[in-house]
Length: 173
Image (cartoon, rainbow, N blue to C red; front, top):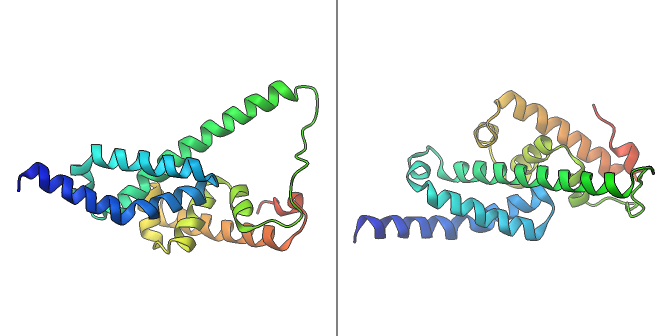
């Protein structure tokens, strides 16, 4: 077998093993199923483009999660900019209130209300059971920051799920 064939076989195995996990992670970060599928695919394209770097990493799966988290962060920023632009033009002289806020928040909706870094930490720690040190490596932050974001995010999430009032649920610590 040639080196190229070995590389392709190794990547195919990596793809099959981690694609679903990356798509779930993207969904929990973004809250958007179609964006999650696209982000997982984009992350895996980046993984293929940098396959040598990925395979030389201490933890290729953590590297892939980091790539995905960065792509999801960029997607969320673009979405926010688009929404703000639309809101500014449509509601220039009016105060905007979302009339469709449900009385009872589900976990997905509550997760989407967490600040991005807290959401990433909570999802990686609790939904994917990733150790704090690995979360720190994935997100490029310190272990202490992971602990802080995870703790505050979990507290904020618990508060949102207990309170029927979404405005009160957004209180910050």
